[in-house]
Amino acid sequence: MLWFNLATVVPVCLLVLAGFFGGTWALLALAYMTVFVFTMDRLIKGAAARKNSDNEFPAGEGLLVFLGLSHIALVVIAVMALSGVTGLTWIERGMCFILFGQFFGQVSNANAHELIHKGSRWMRRLGVAVYTTLLFGHHASAHTKVHHVFVGSWRDPNTARLGESVYRFWPRAWYGSFMSGLEAENEFRKRSQTPKPWWTHPYWSYLLGSGLTLIGAMLIAGWMGLAALLAVCVYATLQHLASDYIQHYGLQRRKLHNGRLEPVGPKHSWNSPHTFSSAMMLNVPRHSDHHMTPTRPFTELRLDEEDVPMLPKSLPAMGIISLVPPLWRYMMDERVKAVTGVSSSAS
Image (cartoon, rainbow, N blue to C red):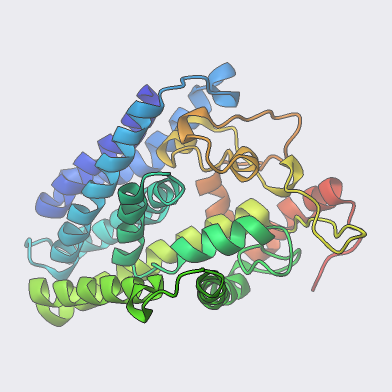
């Protein structure tokens, strides 16, 4: 559990200090989120990088709750810092934009992802609250009711197709997940034996939560606060969708003779063995095991490098590489073909 605490709690403290005081604290936070994480990934090797047997689920739950509640406070601080309320210079605001955007995209989203998979209703609601403050509430429905069901198929908008650039994937995945999540929730409600009032539809809570977040930003710093919130949420969402893009790029499930998709297996997700960045993202890069056992606590997700497709770099590093489509395809298309046996790529 040490790596999870170190990797996630330290940046929370640094972001608070950077948001209020800028300067050295912003530089330290930026160094931590980039150079330090990259260096630790290179230094930490061995069994800890491949398998995790901590089995400290109670401690893991405590960290999830801490990060969820901290996220709400960090959104307020981000709006204040980026809008100028805390008196930062434009250079300091630029650094804070990168810092808060990276944290929300890589850590807050990963934490919300863990929370919405929990059995506890209030923990799931905390995960939904994190998503809605990032104006991305519909993902709570689309992820559990669409992505986990249809991953690796054309019915999942969050599965990237071979040859598809991240720039083409972003709008398709956002709109597709919004609509497919809505459709899935509507179908779920139709199957309910007891009719439910219209206001209990989860999409209303997503819209209400996002609306209240926007109003809160306006109350904190007016139009500048609203602009700051929208900018950092867009940045965070693009990172989240880029993670989906990377983790399923080009991997497809076969359709069986009965018309159904083959069961989700280890070959249907890309993984990363880089320990520290994985800890910072609550083991999201151990993605195959998560899809095969969605209820398994993040502290116990397993990674067998011989059985699952492996990314050539850490997940954050691949996020940067994906922004250059020719380089991305050069690094990934042959790997996809090796895993799937596909002989030609899409244009």
